Structures are given as structure tokens and as C-alpha cells.
Length: 127
Length: 254
Image (tube, rainbow over all chains, first blue to last red):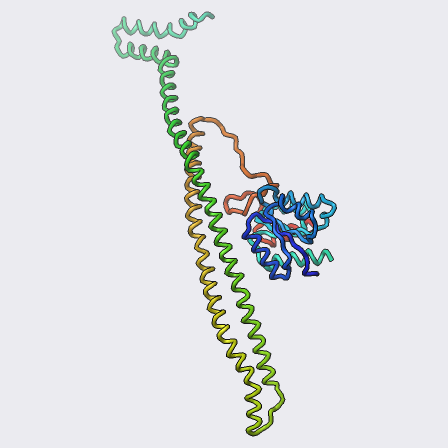
């Protein structure tokens, strides 16, 4: 899989965005942009150029679940791989996220290995 | 039946026993009959006074609880909000400080590994070099071939020393940066104390009012999210590890 993929990392905490950005960099994906909630992220995604979305759930403004629903409803973005990376761990929430169309779901706190494994799985499946 | 007829029925017997006791000079029976009549009138008088006294007492208690509540709402809640905002700032700073140090240390360790790998290659080439032949000339050629390796080792060692010392210092700073946990923990504990007091005050107020307050839970809209799982607070079925999530999703065909 190409390492030129462009990621958008959406999380309201800048530390978490930084951690994810560093991990992606270590995994060989240096092309990463950031947004602090769904409202900021959606226009960035609609402007084009992104290949992968990693989003948190619990954010002020537009939460991650709403962002995913908006992405899936947009014809241009509908097929974009989406990984949810969140502290939300209720069974019904995971099911809801799956129904909204996430490609992977990772709960915080997470490890670098888990992130790599999910990315590989999603990108491998998309080939 | 008229009101007076009811009174006659209620009080007639008492009045009879009262006059009988008076006539017979029975003091005990007389006072028993008087007490009975007084108790019959109590609902209209003493009970009312008792109720008023009770209400007044409740009103006074309510006043003191409400002044405490007003104080909490006006001063301590905004104060708690500031303290919690400070907690976010402290954790944010500590995390960035740690990340800065990690970002600075990574390239140093990488450089050491890279230079060491190059040295290993040089040593290997020296060892695998074609035989230099015997005698004095052979020994000189051997030394000449080793000279660049020795120079590389000489250049490498001070770099390793400086880089390792820097990494060690960075790690010590990472360690120090974790001090935020103690400080934020103390602040959060003080906020918990305030919440406990607020809970107790509100419960007293509810008890005094005697009203049944409908229970509502905040932040239960699943679309907004609930935040991290807090042991003892988060209700419902919760995934405790990534494996639980994976199992659930594979059960859904993902």
C-alpha cells in the first residue's frame, strides 16, 4: 500500500492528535493533517485530497459519529476508509458506529501495535 | 343530620360522664372526662399550632440550606470550573512536554544506531580484507588498512557519549513531567469534595420539600458520547479491552 496516503486526524485534544500523528509518522505515513472536531473536519474532507479518516467520538461541536454519518452521506466521500479512535466503549455505541459505517474501531488507551494492525487491516481490505 | 346533632352525639356522652363525676365528687373521672373533651378539640387548635411550628422550623432549615446552596452556586461552582480547566491545561502541558522530549530523543538514538551499523560494516570489511602477506611490509599494510576504522571509532565514541547523556537527561525530564498527575489529582479530589457537599445539600432540600424529584441523567445522548469509561460510574455493557471490540465487530461481520 502506498505510503503517500493523506490522513486526517480529528480529535478535540491536541495532545492526542500529536500522539496519533507521531505514531502514523513512525508507521511510515508522514502526510497527516489535523482537525479539532467534525465541523472543522467536514469542509477539509469535502475539499478533497484525503485518503483516510481517523476520528474521535466525543467532541464539542460535531461529534465523530455525526461526522462519519455526514461522510457516508456524501457521494464523493462515501467510500473513504474511516477508523474510529475513542474512549467510548459501550457495546451499543460500538454497534452504532459499525452501523454508521466505520471500517475499524479502536478504544483508548491504545497501543501503537493496535493502531498499526487496524490500519493494515483496513488498507489491506481496500486493495 | 344537622351539625348540632353531630356535636350532640360526639360530646353528649362526654358531658354526661363529666357531670356524673362532678356530682359523685370523683376527681379522677372528672379530669379524665375533661382531657377527653380537650383531645376532641385538638385537631382544630393544637394540631394546627404544631403544624405551624413545624412549617416554621422547615422554613428556617430551608433558608439555611438555600443560603449554602446560593453560596455554592455563586462562588464554589465557578471556582471548581476554573480548577478543572486548570487540570486540563496542566495535563495538556505535561503531555506536550513529554512528546517534545520523545521527539528530541528519537533522532539521537537513531543516529547512534546508524553510526554503529556503519562501524560494524567497516570492522567486517577490515576482517575480510585480502591477506596482507607476511613480514614487516605485511604488518604495515595491516595497520594502514585499520587506520580509517580506528579514526571512525574515535569519532563515534564522543558522539555516543554526548547523545546518550542527552537522552538520559530527556528521560529524566519525561519522568519529572509526570508530576502533573499528583497536582491534578489533588485538584480533582477537592472538586469531588464539593460535589459531595452539593449532593448532600440538595438531598436535604429534597427531604425538606418532601417532593419526589424525577430522576434525570445528564449526558445520556449516545450521539454525543459519554467520555472515557470511569469505573463505578459508567453503566451498561462496556468493552474492557480492544479484544472485546474486535469480537463484537467480527460478530457483526466486520
